[in-house]
Length: 354
Image: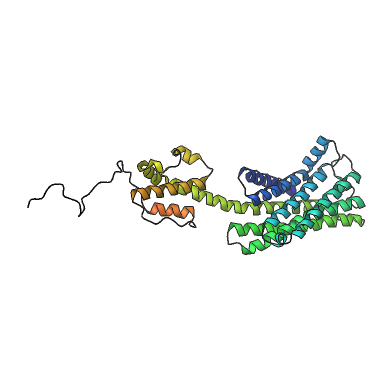
């Protein structure tokens, strides 16, 4: 298997794994927009595989139909990227007219590509019309429009990720944003390569038609998408680290929580989870840890054993859990009725001898 094929399969696996993960986890509005970009990019790159492309053409009985499918998916991904950029502070969000122009240009690009696809000569062979008729006016125009659609999305990536990388703190977020910026720059290199291919063929040169030039183009495209996948996954790794920390804190608090609710069962909201359910339930860890902290605090308050003030709302859940563990465990008391002790104003139990 050639290096380009190996890299493409690696990218496909990474893109679809990341896409499935994004759909399997709840997302805010920005996350849903990013999810749309990712699935459109994954579809576009999947149709770009020669085996998938040829199988699609045969299945739909339309010669080279996979070409507009992958290119229109790229244009749609660029439009989704414009939407993502408009949700973030920056030049696109501050200029609604620029955003409308971007949408209009992408829509015009998609329509023009569909018209050119119908007019361009095509054949049911394994190659596509972009390679078979490179240099003809229709195909040259189609190729340039394709790269323009990609350029809009990459320009939005640069406008969004490069300034954000400079503002981000050190860690996975900054590293991920820098990888995304590098991916956009590699994407611009890919655009330059494909435009040069069309222009050189239009000028009658076949210098970029050899297998080496084709492999280079595929490697650049795969490297761009791999950088995008890695850059998007790094912040997710930071989220996984936070999840692991919260899950560990939840389990470490269980003995203290169990002792507390044994004394005051009414502080628990709902049925107390079993030990096995507590270990195997992987969703809602933040909420469960927050509730566990509140239930322990409530029990400590009622038992009069709270040794610290309630934690600040800005304190992280893990820090609150550590603070509770430092206070020591709560001793279960079967009988919570207060023991009456005589005070200095209470009459003695028996009259004193005078």
